[in-house]
Image 1: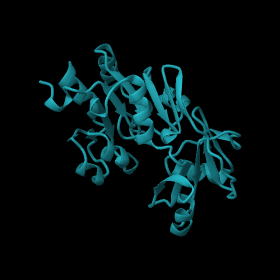
Image 2 (image 1 turned 180 degrees about the horizontal axis):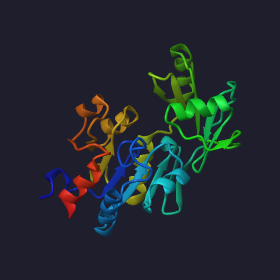
Image 3 (image 1 turned 30 degrees about the horizontal axis):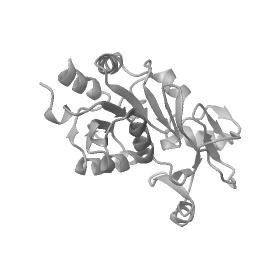
Length: 245
């Protein structure tokens, strides 16, 4: 029997890492999860992702044609070939070691930057720097520098690794979700969001219906509607089959 809070849901939005793909245990998104996503689409639901990952990387690891892609943490949004948000970052880069993200691929500025990226779970695909980019990843950022950067840019910060992702002010996951659902003609209460990490917290606070993964960042649980099994145990697939098959 479907959980009652799902009765109004028309739009499914998934974070990727540790939600529908676990890089520590998987090379590609599991067959069960792909089947579950196809089941949702067959039943007429809109299905998409919200991530900092690139479009090319998503297609490499997830064999599924999503209805929409919220990329670069909300700086670029595409829905069935219609670009809804396209706001590249305008900043002079002074550090030597950094990553630049476009919606489609990533660039690393040096071997050290690539090493730092892979060590901290970021994607590092091409050497060099993108001429037009949407996220800038800087390493070894102290609190003082973080506060200065946050004055002019929106920022995601990983305190344990002192790593920061910068994007233009006003570009965020929650802004992107609002623009998307306005375009699709739905209301916020018709959206369910699945996530696991601290960068999902702003969405959990914003979206009325949110699903936390097993083993998630504890701060999500205060705002989550429900918690499911871990990604490595196919938590999303189990949840979808239990409620929609």
